Image 1 (cartoon, one colour):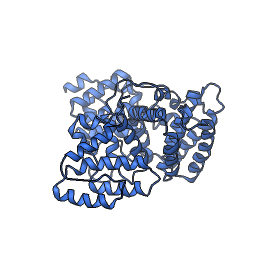
Image 2 (cartoon, helix red, strand yellow; image 1 turned 90 degrees about the vertical axis):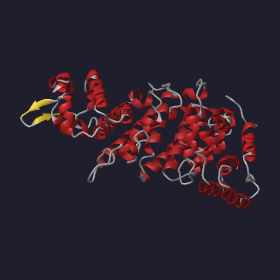
Image 3 (cartoon, one colour; image 1 turned 135 degrees about the horizontal axis):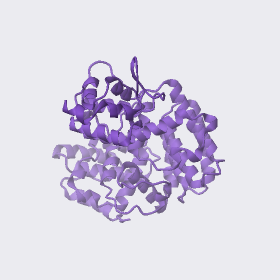
Image 4 (cartoon, helix red, strand yellow; image 1 turned 180 degrees about the vertical axis):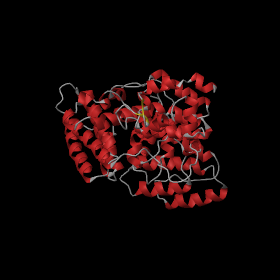
Length: 441
């Protein structure tokens, strides 16, 4: 067939490192090098409605080669670059979901870090050479690496992008219990060694450790929790002043985020009250969020960007992300609320830029939940201000009956709540509350 002529099997087999045996094809001796990429590749194939045999025919390879890629026994990213590009283009032609195809790069990065951790003996760990010590990951990568540990599908792989499958199927790349334990042990040992590694400066060592702290939030063991508390005390001593940005400030931020993800929100609330009290730290926090969610396409090799100028970034994606996360059961709820307040304080006119941005604000039910959380709170007036202004925007668009009910709830909410009256004029008032505090960075 034409596809076979364009993709000769000999080229793909040689490039993939497969060798022919009496039993078919086997990998080059490095099992599970492409676990995450392989699972994603399977989803890509299924999004095109292809079986392993059909895809193998289109690519001109043996079905065992495709099976090896999907199981992680043979690393898809271990093929020649030209061949991998060729496979991706062919899958695109066959109707594979482009969103899944675009996630392959993050999956390949995640596989590299995973293989590095699992393939390095703890006593031979070299912090200065660690892949997490030389770049600032974005959420798309972090969620991909977390996938085998948390079972939560990365945001880039939205459910509607996947076709339904029959029978029991794996929802995430599968690691053995031993592999999971080995991965987390590797991270702890590497972080501890970074303090004494003379090849690492403070910036590189702190970047490595804060990446480790975030990754350890995926492990709920008591051993890891105790280790994080011990390292928090050490990082706090290094930080000294909380109201001044430094690389250690970033490490403490990652530690309190890890605690919150494990169920202890008190360190995060303390960090918000003390370490997000200055304009410099507020700006650093927003710069971090902007890079984390991809508001800027720039890639950084250290955390120094937080204290600098990122250039132009709109803030719209960040606004939507925060608004979508305003759920009181969210482990980072307090940080989302505070960061949203800081964003609107600096870029309040974001809400006027696009009318559709009003849509994601909390519904009345979520507002009630937020009010209860903020009023009992240690969250403080900034939470009440953000909750009130956000609820205000959602309420003025409701029907008159719903607005009447909202009025009653607002009056019962106490003096800190904004009164809710009929008509969009009151929404203008709410806008002005933000506009008066508006400062463009």
